[in-house]
Length: 326
Image 1 (cartoon, rainbow, N blue to C red):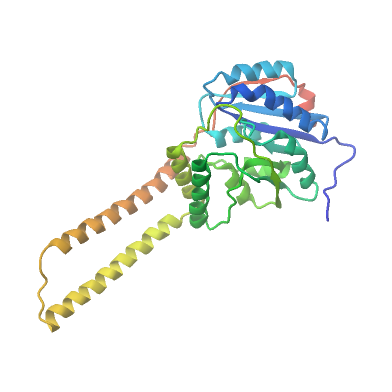
Image 2: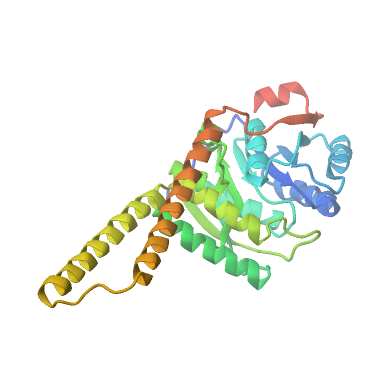
């Protein structure tokens, strides 16, 4: 077994990136448990809390925690950009040799970070937390399974629905991730696409400490559509295949009617079949236009060149030399 060799003269630094939305009540416990979990690994660390316009006053709490602990950094986004954009904001400023990404609701236990780090020392650049038993509602578990099934079909990948955002990344992976500046973002899929050496270990999954998930059915469907369009052009190929299939079936049906009329002297009766066919084909045409329109809309968004996120305020008590030395 090959273990990663670290420079003994250089102390390891770990960054923890946490997007924050709707979990103000558990931030104090979260940061306390994070500090206790990371300190046995390294003396120097940073906890980056990205407030994604949380409606429960989370930014005020983050500023208070920053005053209490110099290792806590707060980033306040100008508006709600979404979880994966908030993760990007955190990764853009993380300076650790290793970077942990996790949610803020304490469903992923900070106490599992040492296990992720230990596994990474075996030579892996990415170590994912694999939830042994998900403490979510049956609806969320079902929608998660369906999302990954559909996504894997269109993207041609093999995903594990028990794996979410909880992971540890080497600084090389973070550097690669920073180069991906698409507007349409899905953190786990980007990490998968980068292709670094990856492993997964079982982690504990806890019931949600406070608040509720902001991902309702509508948002999950939108996320699935965005992920598929961002990672695959298979829907476009399918629309072409369906078009050729319908044309082929129509051709065969035409040959059948031609044979009946000229060889069996059976006239073509009524307009019902004609109207049904017209509506059917029209529906397919509009559906294909819709798929094409989605791709064109995403291209339009990318060509605007707008920033992935905007920062309203940053609070950081860390001395400047610590940032430069990491």
